[in-house]
Length: 349
Image: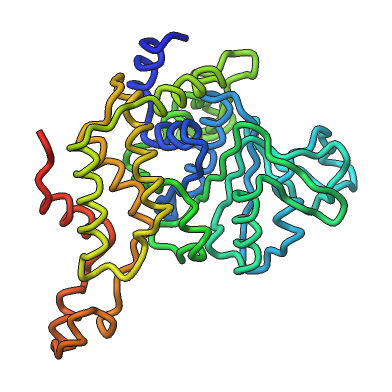
């Protein structure tokens, strides 16, 4: 597919599809959040996107405070062998072309999938989250019986509730971007791949919802060649001196904002410019614009910025009133801080 055809397909992508595509293009990882009542639907939507849009394999693992290191390492493996539901062997729950492994010990034919969807990873213990961090850093995971290397491409999608417990500091910093999906925006792949069937034996109000996943014989919308092409184009995207200065002004203002306790890290700065460059080919241009820098800032720092506690706010060192500082910080979120900074800096023409 040529560059113009890729751009045409990008225009039709949903917000979740774009978040996953950007992560794959940049060879990085993402957080996707939504409301509690939409979490199951979003999980299914992501599975269908991975299969239908990118033609990749995926595993969903449900994390809790009781998830052990072995549960995590064996739970993200993709087995080549299907277990009969009626047998006494460990069960594999399938959904579309992706599935969750429960209680399955690693076998020689196990391997890591292209995409791991870690649902509620923030609920897992510190040790499990550090293991996930090591997976991202080294590209390998250890079990009691073997060492598994990640395939190419590889993507970790952290599926969380909005306003959930944040990830441990260093894992959170390794996440490329975060995105909130509003349930009101719908779930395009589920809706397009579903049909409503009325059961004759039921009442008129009884309807069966049947999900139909696109078969593997159909070509993915964005295959490995298209993703690599976008990656090459993003690396060759130019950043003018004025735009680079604008990018660094945003960094400085964020770091010096009185409500920011932490989150403006060197790795975040690297991700900031990387995302801005990755957005350019998706807009069919070969240079970074101020509007792309603004969009990148909203996605890169949303999950990173930690709002300072009133007692630690810097003006308290000079005798500020605690009640006044608390009132100033009340209701302030990372999103609001980012918008304040973007409004306060003049973008280059």
